[in-house]
Amino acid sequence: MKNTIEILEQNQHLRNKCLVYTRVMGYHRPVESFNIGKKGEHRQRTYFKEVLC
Image (cartoon, rainbow, N blue to C red; front, side, top):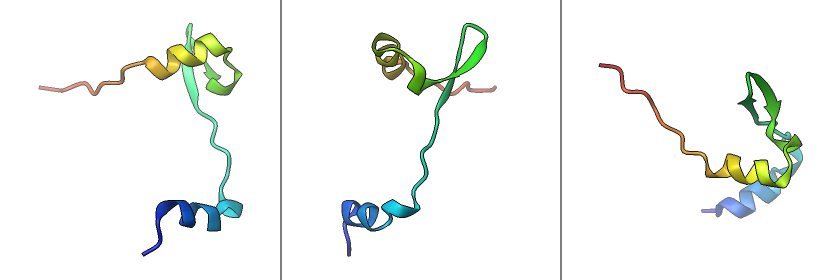
C-alpha cells in the first residue's frame, strides 16, 4: 500500500489552494493576509464544540 506522501505527490496537479477565513473585529478576513504576529495568534486558538443539553 502506498504511503500518504507518495499519493499526495502523484496527485499534486489535482490540488487547489484553499483560503481559510476567520472573523476579525466583526468581519471576515483571509488568514493568509495576516501579519506574522496575527498568524501566530490564529495558530494558538483553541476551538471548541458547544454541547447542547
